[in-house]
Length: 173
Ligand code: S3P
Image (tube, rainbow, N blue to C red; front, side, top):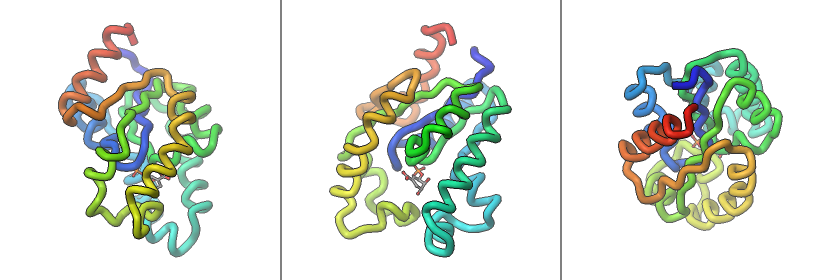
C-alpha cells in the first residue's frame, strides 16, 4: 500500500471521520482528524473559534495545518468540509497525498447531522436548504480536486472503508 497520506475530503457529515478511523484501523495507519487537531491546538471548539474569532481565523488555522500535513507520510487524514475553499490547501495536501472525495447526497448528509450543533455553518433554521446550497456550490471543487471519487451514499461506514481500501489496491496505489 502507498506510503502517501490518504486524504479524505467531502461535505460536512458525509462520514469522513468515521470512515477514516476504520481505514486506519484496517490497514494499521495513523489517523488524523484535522478539525480535532485544530480544536486541540486552539483549546476551543470550532463553534467557539467561529464565535470568538471568525471563520476567517479558522480558515487560517486550517491552512497552517495543511502545510504541516505536506511534510508527513502514511497517515489517513480526515479534513474539514471547507478545505476546498482555498486551493493552497489542496496544493499542500497533494504534495504527499492521494485525495479521495467521499461523495454523498443531501438527504444522507441531513440524516447524519440533523441533531448535531457542532457545525457553525449549519446552525441555521433550515439545515436541509443550507446543505443543498453549500453542496451545490462546493461539489465542482470536490470533484475537480480529488484523485479518486467514491460515491458512498448507499454504503455503510464499514463498507465504505473496505471499498476505499480495495480501490486503492486495485489502482496500485
Ligand atoms: C466546515 C466543516 C467542518 C468544520 C467547520 C467548517 C465547512 O468540518 O471544519 O465547521 O466549511 O464545511 P466537517 O466537514 O468535519 O464537519
